[in-house]
Image (tube, rainbow over all chains, first blue to last red):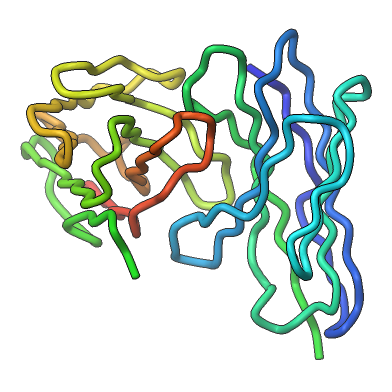
Amino acid sequence: GQNIDQPTEMTATEGAIVQINCTYQTSGFNGLFWYQQHAGEAPTFLSYNVLDGLEEKGRFSSFLSRSKGYSYLLLKELQMKDSASYLCAVSPPDSWGKLQFGAGTQVVVTP
Amino acid sequence: EADIYQTPRYLVIGTGKKITLECSQTMGHDKMYWYQQDPGMELHLIHYSYGVNSTEKGDLSSESTVSRIRTEHFPLTLESARPSHTSQYLCASSESGLGELFFGEGSRLTVL
């Protein structure tokens, strides 16, 4: 396995910024993915990092440091609809989409 | 809009019954996957397929079986359901195989 660790839950206020950290251990690496999953719904793809650095997509940004086995997802200008579970997933070498997921971080946005 | 469909969404059945969970996608993706997810837990890959007549078992051992006779269709079958099979089953597909997966809405199975 990839030993993917992320916090269980985070709470933040509407309009604020929240950073969800993810650490992983792997001997090889094809990319790191973030998915959003609302309660009772299917996960949806948010972002993908294969090289070190920051990828920005509107209110969401994702950062990767391969040497540290570390990534974070940054959610800015939080909205109530951002309340969901955020899943960190690693793509091992030659895996062709066979992602290994963390348990997810439940983000609760309060008014 | 959903281009990957799973049926049934919810199923409650008795022990020993045979069930098939259907998954179809209209995107023409070669790569398809079945993940299992218990509440509050991570998704675990149980089956995958890289194309027609190609199926492999995933990291999590499962008593289920799959088939891939057509590109768009990837059904999962349990020959004899048990309470330990109670879970949510998520089907996904990918065009590139790099990791951007499109998930179906899931099939929530309860075995009594």
